[in-house]
Amino acid sequence: MLVKSIFAGFGGQGVLMMGYVFAHAAMNEGCYVTYLPSYGVEVRGGTANCTVCISDEEIASPIASEPDYLVVMNKPSLFTYQNRVSAGGAIFLNSSIIDNLPSRPDVRVHEIPAGAVAESLGDLRVQNLVMLGAFVRRTDVLSPEAVLKGLRQIMGERKKNVIEINRRAFAAGYELK
Amino acid sequence: MQGNRVIGEAAIRAGCRFYAGYPITPQNELTEYMAEHMRRVKGGVFIQAESELAAINMVLGASAAGARAMTSSSSPGISLKQEGISSLAADELPAVIVNIMRGGPGLGNILPSQGDYFQATRGGGHGDYRTIVLAPASVQELADLTMDAFDLADRYRNPVLLLADGMMGQMMEPVEFRTPSPRQYREEYILRGKGTGKSRFIRALILDAIRMEEHNWKLYRKYQVIAEEEVRFETFWTDDAEILIVAYGTAARIAKGAIKRSREMGIAVGLIRPITLWPFPGEVIRRFAEEVGSFLVFEMNTGQMLEDVKLALEGRARVDFYGRPGGVIPTPAELAKVIAYQVKR
Image (tube, rainbow over all chains, first blue to last red; front, side, top):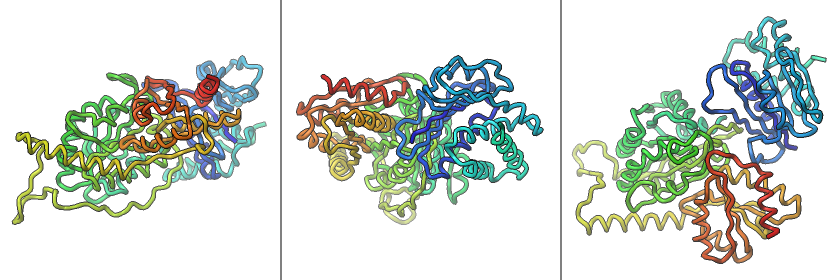
C-alpha cells in the first residue's frame, strides 16, 4: 500500500494544516508517513501546498509526481496540479470558490462545498477541516478517530473551543453526502 | 517532526550547549528551533551571529572552552565557514557542523541538492585535513546521526559534518529519540583559565616546518584510525544482485524505490548506501566487485561520489553514472528506467 496525496490552495486556507493533521493520523495508525511542505520563495497570500505519503513499508520518495489524490482549495491549484493525478485517482475540489471542473475524464471528481459549510458553522477558517472530513470519508485510507486524535495532538495546547469548532467542521465534512 | 527541528532536538538532548548560526534557507527551522529551545536547558547558549564566519569562530571558542558546540547552514553559508572548519581541524577541537545542502554553485537556489560532496569529503577549507562526514537518509537517522556526530567529534577531537539536503531538512517523518550516551572526552585540552595549574594553549600557527610536519603526520595518523574504525554503510537487496547502485542520503531513498520497481520486472539490482561519506566505504565496494560486474552511481549532482567509487574499484568493474543536479529531485520511476537501460546494454 502506498498512497500519495497533494493538498494545495492559497496561503491562509489551512492546506498545510490539513496535510499535517492527515500525516499525524497516519502516524497514529502505525503507518510509514512523510510530509513535505512546499518551501521556497513564497509570498504571503501566494500558493501553498504539501505532499503526504502513507505506506505500510519504507517510503522511497516523499514527492508525488503522480499523486493518487489531489485536494485543491482554489482555482490556480486545480490548474497547476490536475494533470499530475494518476489515472484512476481522485480530485477533491473546494466547490465554494472553484467553478471550473477538471478536464480529466479518467479521475474521479468530488465537489466539496468546504467554504460554504465552514461559513454555515460560523467560521470560514475551518474550511480545511470540512474538506479533510470529506476527504477521509471518501478515501477510506485512515479512520476518522485517528484523524481526530491527530487534531488533538497538534492543537493540544490551544484553547478547547478551537479544537471544538475544528472537530465540528471535520464531522460536517465527514457527513456530507 | 520536521527534519531541521529534529536535528535541533537531538543536539540538545545529546548535550549541545552552544549553538551559533546565521539564517539561510532551507535550514532556517534548525536555527529557529535552537533559538526557542536552547534556553530550556541549563547553560544553553543560542547566538544569532552577524555572519557565518562569526558563527563558526564562536563555535571554535565554545569548543575550546569545553562546550558541546554546533553550527548549521546551507551550501553558500558552509563555504563561508571553511576557514573556521580548517582551524577546528588544525586545533583538534570537536564541533558539529550541519549542512542542509541546496542547489549551487554560487547562491544557486534553495532546492535539495548533493552538490557539496567534494567540499565535504575533501576537508573543504585549506590545508591537509579531513572531517568526518555523516549522510542521513531519513528523519530518524537525522536524530541518531546528530547524536553520533557529537560522540565522534569528542572521540577524535575533530569537526564532524552532518551532510543532508533540503529534502531531509524540510520533510517530516515520525521519529523516536534514543537516550544519548554520557559524554566522554579528555579534559586536558580545555581552556578554562590558568588558575594554579600548568598553562595550556591551542594554536594552529606553527611556523617551524619540522614541527608543522609533525603536526600534519599526527593528524594523518588520527585520520587513519578513523578510516579503520568508523566506516558505516547499509546494504539493500545485494545478495543476488547483478547490478549495484551506490547512492547516499535522499538519492539512496529514491534508489530503494527504483530497486523495488526493477525487482518487480525481474531485474536483480541492489544498493550500497554509504552512511559515512568520509571515511568512505571503498573497501566494501571493492569486495562486492568480486561478485558484481556493474555499478551505477546515483547522485543529485553531476558526479562527485562517482570518483570515490571509481577509486575504490580500480577498474575491477564497470561504473556508470546517473545524476540530476541543480535542485531537481529525480523519481524512483525515472531511475528504474535508467536501471532497465543499463541492464540491456
